Image (cartoon, rainbow, N blue to C red):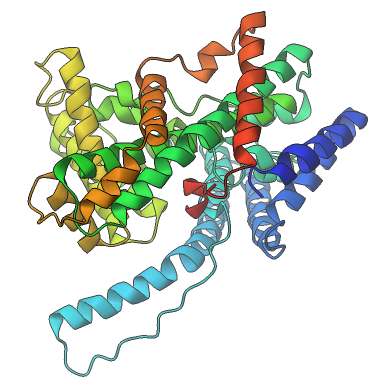
Length: 471
C-alpha cells in the first residue's frame, strides 16, 4: 500500500484516524501498532514476522543492556552483538545473498579459474522497508549501550516505535530517543493536525504532480540506446527531480501523518540542490540517513580524530557502505564511491571543494553537475548501461536518427511544463517545513487546491512508483 493511492487516502487513513481518536490515551499506541502491522503486511503478511522478530530481539537486548551495570560489560557487549548480528543477518540474507553469489560467479569468470563451478544464484523477495526498520531498531540498542538513552520496559511502546507506519517503509529513519517521550506523552491539537494535513498534501503533490512526470522522462531516456548530449542531460536532470520529489514527497507525507497522530519527526530534506559542495549536499539530503551513518559508522571508525587522510578514508568507507545500503549492485557502490571521493577531497581542502573560489551560483551549478553524474550510476540498471549513458552525456556516442522520435515525446509541452515547475520548486520555492509553520487562509487555500489537483491527476495515472520502496 502506498500513500498516494485511493485505498490509502479514502479508506485506510480515515478509518485509522477514526479508530485512533476514539481510543483513550492508553489505547492509542495499541491502535497505532495494530494498523501499522496491517499496513506493512498488506502486500505480504509474512513480512510482519520479520519485523516482529527484529522488534523482539532488540527489545530484549535493550532490556539486558539497560539493566546491566557497567561492571557487567561482557553481558552488555554480548547483548549488543546479538542485536547488531540479528539485524544485519536479516538485512544481509534478504538483500545481499543474490548479489554476493552473482559477484562470486563474475569474479571467477573474469579470472578464468579452471574448475571453478558457478554457484546457483538465489534471489529472495526483498521485504519492504527492511533497510529502514533494521537501522532504526538497531540504533536503539546502540544508544542504550552507549548510555545515550534509557531502555524501555513497555514492549508495546517499543513495537509502536519500530512499526509506526508513516515512516516504516521508506523513512525518515527515526532514532528512539527522538520519540521516546512522545510515545508515552504527546500532544494532540488542531494546529498540529492541520499542519500535518498541509505536509501530507504538499508531499503528495510533489509525488503525483512532479515526481511521476519527471520519472517518465527519465525512464524513456535511460531506456534508449544512444542519446544526443542535450537529451541525455535532460534525462538525468529529470531523474534528479524524480528521486528528489519522490523521496522528499514521501518524507513530507510521513511527517504529515506523524503530526496527525501527535508525533513530531525531524526534517529530512533541506533544499539539497542548492548546495555549494558535496559536504553541504549531505547535510541537506536524506538528513536522517546522513545522521545515522555519522553517529553509528563514521564516528566509531574514528571520525575526524586521526588526521586529514584518515578522515578522508573514513568518509570514503562510510559512503561506500552507504551506497551498498541503497541496493545490492555495484552501481550503488560506484555511486557511493563518487560521493566518498568528493567528500574526502573536500575534507582535505578544509571542508571546501576545489571550486570554492567560484561565485555561489557557479558553485551550486558545479555541485549539481557532480550530483547528476553520480545519479547516472544510481539509476542505470547495469554498470555498462551507466557508462553508455555517460558517453552520451559527454558527446562520445553515435546518435541514431531514431533519437528524434524520443525528442518529440520528452519535449512535449506537458513534460516541459512539468520540468519547469520542478525547477522552480527546487531552486526558488520555500521548504514545506518552513511554509507550513504558520497556516494563513491563503496557505490553507493552496493546500486544498494542490490536494484536489493531486487526487484528480492520481485518478488518471497508472504510473506511480516509489523509488525508495526498493531499498
